[in-house]
Amino acid sequence: VQLVESGGGSAQAGGSLRLSCAVSGDTNSRYCMSWVRQTPGNTREGVANIDINGITGYADSVKGRFTISLDNAKTTVYLQMNSLKPEDTSMYYCAARATCSGPYQHWGQGTQVTVSS
Image 1 (tube, helix red, strand yellow):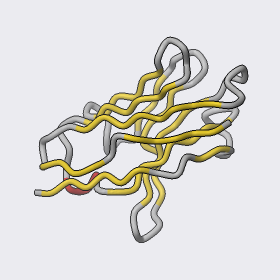
Image 2: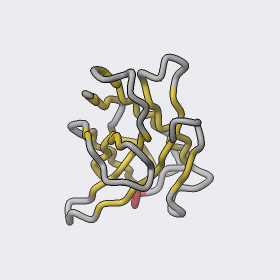
Image 3: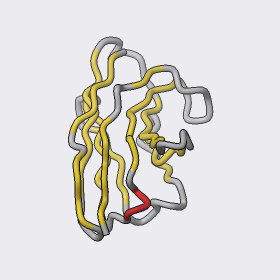
Image 4: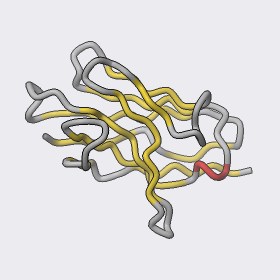
């Protein structure tokens, strides 16, 4: 499966951005789709998940501000980011895995999000 992110960029604190992840290849398989962010210090944080039943989960740091969703064709995963904070600055990756509790199996190339105060 191939994952291609888009939609990153710069925003002011309090602003919004929407990330997209185009999913292609093995689209017949059902994956748990995730957004993961990694800081320059290589700290990795799972930000949001959406499983094959549409059940979502969020890190406490983004709960209430970020929303993950999947289009009807299940070929695009979105991350709507509202009320952005400078600490949201990171490289954001789209990732796929068989279950939301298992290891990440497929990664996109990442998209940079920078939030200024």
